[in-house]
Image 1 (cartoon, rainbow, N blue to C red):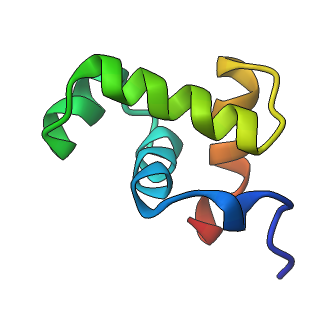
Image 2 (image 1 turned 180 degrees about the horizontal axis):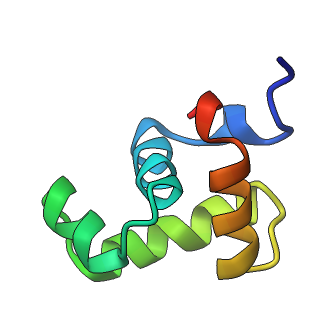
Length: 71
């Protein structure tokens, strides 16, 4: 299976957030689970979207769900 372009650029922390996004978790749920602030989770979401050249929240969610098995 091919690895989507840009996925290798993500840090372990960004991958953890992306994996939880693929599980349809909210920012608050992710923050609580990873013991982070909601602002930190939002910053990671933005960083992930930039590194993967995604259009925003919807693009990020679609990417996460579509690539769930690779995360």
